[in-house]
Image (cartoon, rainbow, N blue to C red):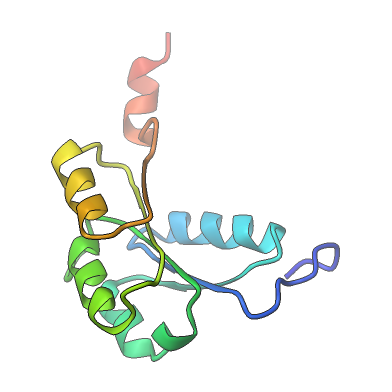
Amino acid sequence: MSAEQPQVSGVLVACVDDDYRVRESVENLLDSAGLACESFESAEAFLESGVLDGVSCLLVDVRMGGLSGLELQRAVRVLRPKLPVIFISAYQDAAVRALALADGATAFFGQAVRRAHASERAP
């Protein structure tokens, strides 16, 4: 937490993504906004951590090893049906997006350009 930005009291965001760069970026962004963030590299690690009851919002990737983001959302819905779940994914799959939203996701954001393809699109 930076000294310039006070922490928003009682708010904990959980980020579940198997890409450490995404977790680190989300942590830095939320820290700059004064929000506490706890990151997990898998859905299983999040579920086993015991923090679900204290989480204010869940940011989750769709495709991960082990349980997928959609499977995590379903498991969370059983225990915390009103917990906001936001998907962030590099995969632009309209069917998966529709399913996540139909299952109660608050939002589903796709990354505009994946790094692997950025150089292919550059002039």
